[in-house]
Length: 68
Image 1 (cartoon, rainbow, N blue to C red):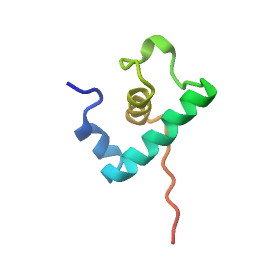
Image 2: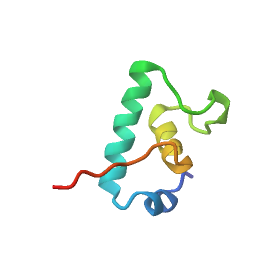
Image 3: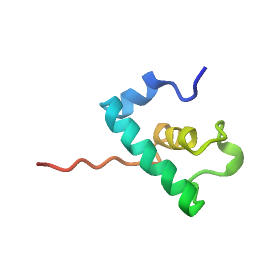
């Protein structure tokens, strides 16, 4: 089973596409800068994409929407 659950994440982010976009940007930042917002042993996932989703669930990533 995947962690965190997509149902929990969609309560935080209103669109699957926006969730994928935010998680991909954050995972690339993790790879490039080796900067994590939680301690290494607090993550359940080993890969950066899963860790980015965990940060979204924990409320560590704020999504700011631009008005058109």
